[in-house]
Length: 435
Image (cartoon, rainbow, N blue to C red; front, side):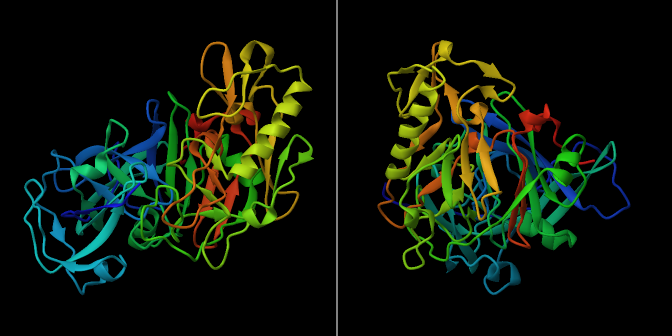
């Protein structure tokens, strides 16, 4: 898809959601953002409040996204200020330089000598270059059973052109990035409050509740016990090659990558071209990224075909009957031939084996199978598309595979902690919160 360059006026923002009118005298250390899933688009979103009027709206969560952008006719504030060229806020954006504003967003003056940056819609592929602004973001934090709020001042963001909302979940006015940049939500909160740059993510299935917790805290039970005793840990690695163009499929350096060494179905390791599993140091292709903006895990064609072949064989050994495929899925089965368990349909497990054999991300039926009708369930992995404008990632772990797993991103030490399926522990992301 061709990249669309849109000139946009932007703002800066510091985000937080409030549920109490009280303030705590202690320094806050962790901030919570509730997560919902939009069933029609398979996108995950949270709510933010910004500006002197605490304008509230929803934004899609992009795990690898660079910054916050939005377009909302409800945004009206007296506290907005442009990010001027040559200022510290401009230097951390690593954006597109200075520009004169072209369009003026509602109730916001257009300013010159303003720092610009690029915003990306990862669903449509549209990219917009716009001035940056800043405003106060209202954020929520916990003290035991009590909820408090505070603000992050001078939070950088873009007030984007409406075209960047195309393809976003219906409730969403924009997108918020959690990526490895200095203007992402985790980085800005860490800088504002002097906390470690880390966050925990627990994505819910449709109809459920999840949470994003930025900073350091203990969790509500039983998730605290799982975090302390049951997490696998693996390095977060960097892809040093970025793509300037359409990033619908390609990589950017601020995304999160893990080092998958092999893939198993049951106890059988797939025969794969191992070079696909590593990031090519010259062109940035290959490797494994983690993407909340992908509905299902996408695999390089050769990996995908090997997975389907072995999964179908293993399913047949359990007397699971294969039926006609339903796009975009390559292997589907009669639901009446599949039994149920607390981890979903009782099907062969799929493992992504990481930097050592004892560390693996295991997917059970709740995360490996998706129901497409009353009588048919399908393997919830898809063939990844080829990136026409840059390097193609071999494996992109999608949101469906992350649901009801606790994921801890320690950006400061470049480590990922992840649980086994919370369903194994008789709990879910709806129980995840700060205490």
